[in-house]
Image (tube, rainbow, N blue to C red):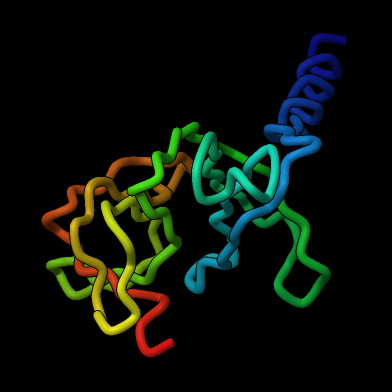
Length: 149
């Protein structure tokens, strides 16, 4: 009987639901090449995607790459964006030469003539436990998604 209860407990805890963001607008999203997981930005309305309260979300892929993508949100970070702040999901290269995608918060307008983001204030990535973690700003160089537009 104890073994059966333990087995049922293990089964249900492994299927625990992720974080729900019902009613939120999806502002931006990007698949992580190395894992198939995703980074997403959510807000209450489309208008608040660029100014106001936003939620950064780490999303773990539950399905295989051959199947329709199914994700669960594993971690979130709430931010308030002021008018002079820009938030992006950018491809960044670390000082060790590895390339990853990160959430990047920078000050000022993103100029389309600059290849790399400047005035970076904060950077967040996803660790092996699918949690959002800060990344030291001085250790990354991030491409400007608007370059050449």
